[in-house]
Length: 177
Image (cartoon, rainbow, N blue to C red; front, side):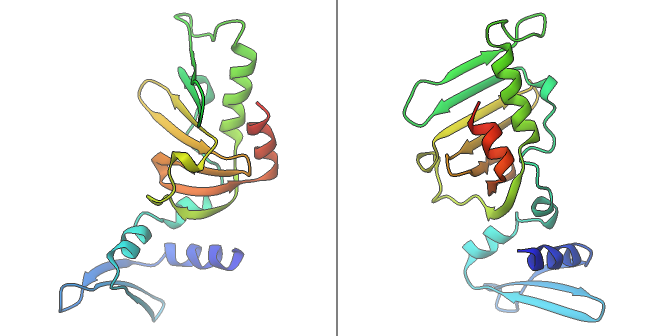
């Protein structure tokens, strides 16, 4: 895992080109730099589709939602897999309802600090909501984030199209809320 991270760091600095071979049906992804050349010939378009969104900077960023500003969250929906969703909205004065404020603030801050021990890769179509215990949706009015969580720490971030495993601290903080 650490060796892969170092390789991705190095590859992120190299120019990347995507081309088609002369037959036009087999993708060729080439990376060139420092006199070296790496080529990936892959006949399976699904593999190429899975690799394209997996940018090195996404793998280096350990925060689940690096752009989340806790104070900007206006709405929070927690949808258990087999249950009724809980909906929380800020009041006109910008505060959460008094009886909900401590729990909602703690949960949103836990999500803001949540980090993964490792990203496992892009979110695939075979991993759906039925594979997770709950879905959390946060809205700021202009942005929305959807996170799927499982008790064992597996987390999927739909907007980033990534699946990973929460680190131990994050798992405790998020799951205990």
